[in-house]
Image (cartoon, rainbow, N blue to C red; front, side):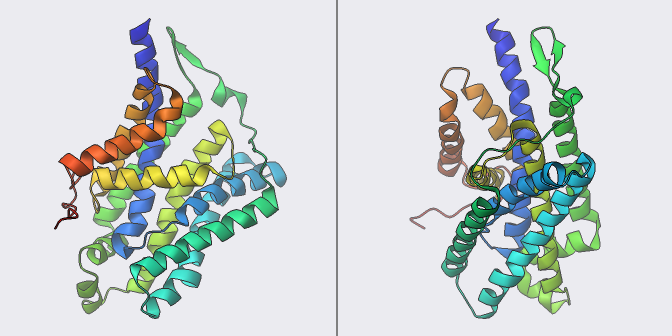
Length: 297
């Protein structure tokens, strides 16, 4: 029976890891080219779920239309934060710390607005029963929603990989990531590309938020945990490496769920940061990224 439990935890870990991979890619899409530690990304994640809730449960839109609306609205919200907050700071010569503190301030303000509009009560979204009915495989259980989560995450990650490698905008994003000054010199419209990265990164985090909302419901506080997972996965995967971030997200999901086989589930966050600590100590470059400088250097 123990090995069946282990296999069930592995399946759960793959499902969670698929969402973690999306979180990591969404944060890396913004951070890698802009070098902006977008703390307000946590709020975008939460708002994505609440937009979905409002469209589907408040206004009665069909679920597919509500999902699309939540993703697009989140993308627009990410661009708005960049235009209203980060762009003026950047043009005034603000440093990294000023931008970080401003991002945290935006997070606090957005969280307060969310509480005013939707209150602090947990929210659930009505999902067709067929998506939540477990499919038994012996003593194992998988729901269609689990399968849809993994399939959608895989398709989105593959689409991002193709986009970054073969499209003109994707190549521009990678060029700015590698050398922003040279990108300007060769005529890449950096402001337009920056807006595109915030829209894309925010839309990607919305996809993860949608599946979380459909499966577990919503609470105003879920954004910080999502942000922490995204940052840890980006570092473990290697800063600047999109495949590394996705792989690290999957690894974190599997390790967290296998870890609670022997220890309480409340220790999930501890497991995540233990993985981060091990990588910083023994492989600071992550899976595929550049080496992170040690403090003594």
